[in-house]
Amino acid sequence: MKHNLLMVLGPTEVERDILEVASNPQDYMRTEDYTRKWLRIFENLKYAFQTENPVVVFASSGTGSMEAAVTNVLSKGDKAIYINGGSFGKRWGDICLKHGVRTVEIPVEFGKSVEPEQVRTALEENPDTKAVFATLNETSSGALTGIKAIGGILKAYPDTLFVVDCVSGILADEFLPDSWGVDVAVSASQKAFALPPGLGFMSVSEKALKFAESADLRSFYFDIFDYVNNAKRGQTPFTPAVSLVNQLDKRLEKIRKEGLENFRARYRKNTDYLRAGLEKLGFKIIAENPANCTSAVYTTEYDASQIVSIMREKHGIEIAPSGGELKTHVFRIGNYGNIGEKEIKKCLKALEVTLKELR
Image (cartoon, rainbow, N blue to C red):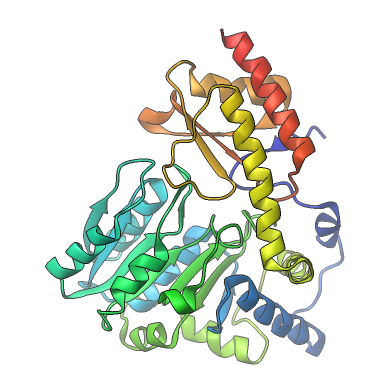
């Protein structure tokens, strides 16, 4: 079967030994052995999230985790502030509106990062805000958000939660939710975790759990108390995605062995190598404060959608398109997962050939 090299933002290239885990026979999850596995996973997820708070696992996409964050801590009619710097920041607002939460948008120019003072102003103008929603790495532009600074501001608002989407930022960029004042952090399996899609993660603080006690949007499937209480006994409330969970166990083991700092440094080295190559080809990264592993490029010289198509059809390499009015101007390259210098060289060479063809 033909396989295109994945240089997108997820799914990612998965290491062979991790892939092979999925081909193992299915396990029954309600056993003492599987309980021990879950307890190991939950501890290792705390390491990955750099938190002492519980981290739960959903059989869902990252968007499922985002919705779980909203529905577990808010009630209909509550007010929330969300930072909209692109498609994924906007998603916070969309989820809130779907559930009858009143929203205050902080719009951010594409490719830029929110100024912390904008958040302070929004809070001063809306003192009844129950939650502030932010995105560690806006995947559509590759812009990194100053979560630490925003968390510092929110310390003056003890009745407001800080909720962060770190789907494409966790592991790749520094993220210290406990010391930065993050109450809820959500992520997923298909980016820096370099696993197939299908697992959602959520860490939740004691403060967030107190909010959850009175939240009237809590759903049956995503009820955080079911997950936290089951995690204490090394289980999940519903059938987990067994093969993915087994892959997660091995992935977390490998991350612990390598060490998070080394893991992140390896990703950073590859990102720098990729961006140096893009610069030689005449491209500039959009983000003023770019995140690791996410390189979004803006071009007026070429049709970005044609670049994406040629790379796929002629070179067997997937790079990520953009939608809407950015479709012909923006493409994105990710180097999450099993991507090293060899794969990046291949991508850059193919991109060089593509540009010559387009000229």
